[in-house]
Amino acid sequence: MIVKNEEKYLEACLKSVKNKVNEIIIVDTGSQDQTIDIAKENGAKVFSIKWNNDFAAARNFSIKQATMDYILVMDADEHLDENVDLQKVLTSEKDHYSIRIKNELSSGGSIFHPAVRLFKNFIGLQYFGKIHEHLNVDRPTSELSHEFGDVLIHHIGYKDDVVVEKEKHNRNMKILLDEVETNPTGYNLYNLGNQYKANEQHNEALEAYKKAFPLSKDRLYINYLLYNMIDCLRILGRTKEALDVLDASIESFPNHTDFYFMRGRIYEEMAYYKDAEIAYKKCVELGEVKLLQTLDGVGSYLSFIRLGHIYIELGDYSSALDMATEALKSNRYHMPALKMYLELLIRTNVPNVKIKENIKEIFPIASFEDLKHLVIVLSVIKSPLLQEFLDQYNLKVSESVLGISKLYSKNYMESFRIWKGNGLESDEYKDVLLLAFLLKNNDLEDKYKSSLNLSKKEWKLVDKLIYRDKVDFGKISEELEDIIVFISKQLIYLYEDEHFNYLFNVIAKGSSSLKIKFSKMLMETGFTQNAQQLLLDFYVENQTNKEYVELLADTCYKQKQFNEAISFYNRVTELSKDYLSYEKMFRTFEKLNDQKALELLNEEIKRLFPLALWVK
Image (cartoon, rainbow, N blue to C red; front, side):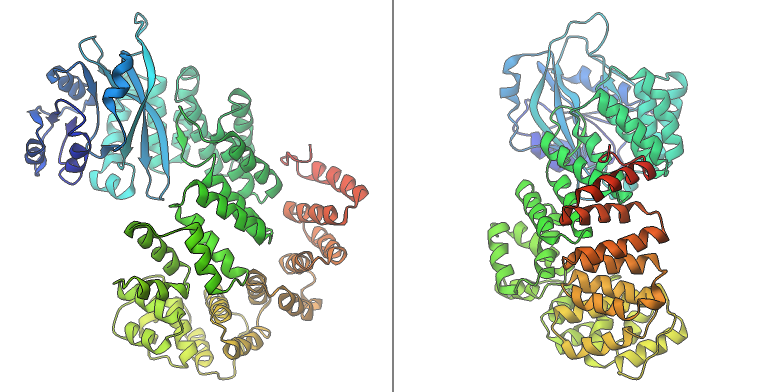
């Protein structure tokens, strides 16, 4: 290992290898913290050298100190998986082994990539490259033996807090620019592109990838070079170019799951849901990528979750629930999967008693980590079951979580007492406003006022709502609209019918945008008929509002009023040539089994939307 100021991570790394290797060699490049002391306490042989912005030079110095037959190279922000048996791997006595590195991301996901980290000593292997250094295992004159070893290393260095703490971006960029100038290889240009992309400099990253591509066609990283190039084009809004590069990549690498996942992502963002659905299903069919760099979960839980989101957008909660279940089977600790699963149970009006039974089946509590995981999700979705689990396991939680749990278990005064004495988390102001509305008491106004960017007029409206005075919304900000819809939704889940009916009558006199948001919420919570009636009551003055008419069509589709849905979708297409409206119309004709209409519509979609693949 080479290290510098790694006291925060080093001990965990060394403990992971301590009983699996014969010696630990650490080269320090100028630590000013407790790094060296920690290394020595864990039995390492420590050497020091002056840092000269050259990782390869430091690595090669560390190799010279090693006395054993094989060398395992690690960094301090990594740890060896507890199930790894290095001696068993080395029974094949290869010259070098590619192993898997699992890079954990701040988002909760991870990226796997292969790297040669385990190799024979004393056969002349050395590192090259001042940064992102690599062994000379592919030197032209060598005939070295190689295989993929069953070794997994966990890496946390890509998490945002670690990157900021180490100022890795600034350090790496300077070294990379110097390296590319003196040695513009495909690998150096690829890594420069990665650094620009990490800095969100996507135009610069794209140019670096383009230069790297012709120099990298026979390299293991070529798939991810293409993936990152496509992702930059996607982020820059150059969708047609992204899809063109993606099609060429799939033609060259037809079994690389990540490319299909990227296709699904692009089409999902375009609301081309049929093509996105096909792409994600292909990901599941292909499964996870084993030996190349890959995003963990593209062949399983990530694709199931994306399919779930598509089905939610289309109002098919039953299929979405199936996808959330499959995602949890693939990775029970994927929080978005558990969150989606529980939210869908709530949306489909499953009683809390039944939801608790489902939790026991799909997410049995076998450890404190399991319980912690579940409590976090229950607090995020504001489930009344949160308080039950806190009581059952006698858990001590923050005042923030406790305030939420008391509110949604309908212990309003206890929730008021907690929030009265404490500050708020940034995302709690809506909950406190809900509490104020329920109690008809705005004593907590100072708690949430600073978090809201409302006008003086809107604050007066909030006070009138809290005290049930006569309210005329007129035109209000999107922020206030979102708050009102949020409160309405929670009132449904809390079974506060009287309070909800008051808001319903007020909203009915509000703007079209408020009615649209409110009607969408009603559909989400199973009150599609009510949403439809509200929209029909004000249809005449909104018949030129494309979003309004489309939502009305959606309510018809949801209630299996397919002929009426077709009529409204036709109206939508008259107002705007929007792809999603055509796809929804196609799905409706499928329900009617109208083959002639399907053929005609297929041709129309093909003509209007050349990027759609499923019609070709």
